[in-house]
Amino acid sequence: MAKRLANVNTDICVACGVCRLQCPREAISIYKGCYALVNEEICVGCGLCEKACPASAINLKERSI
Ligand code: SF4
Ligand code: SF4
Image 1 (cartoon, rainbow, N blue to C red):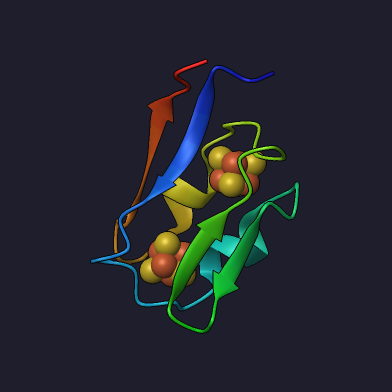
Image 2 (cartoon, helix red, strand yellow):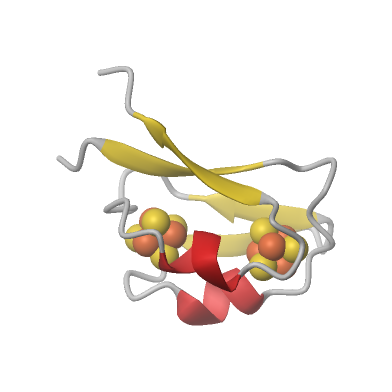
């Protein structure tokens, strides 16, 4: 499993969906139209969503396990 994982700051996310479109693994959904939700089982930590987010609401964090 990848060492890193996309982490969404839901206070900043504006639910635009740009990250969802960028993700090559389709690991992101927009939860109830409110914020981006990352499927931790699928995310490979590539960082494309982090680069694409216009609100800088995503950062990569180290997996704890
Ligand atoms: S691109 Fe950024 S602001 Fe837009 S849905 Fe994704 S995390 Fe939220
Ligand atoms: S880090 Fe890569 S695989 Fe993980 S959610 Fe973002 S774009 Fe998808």
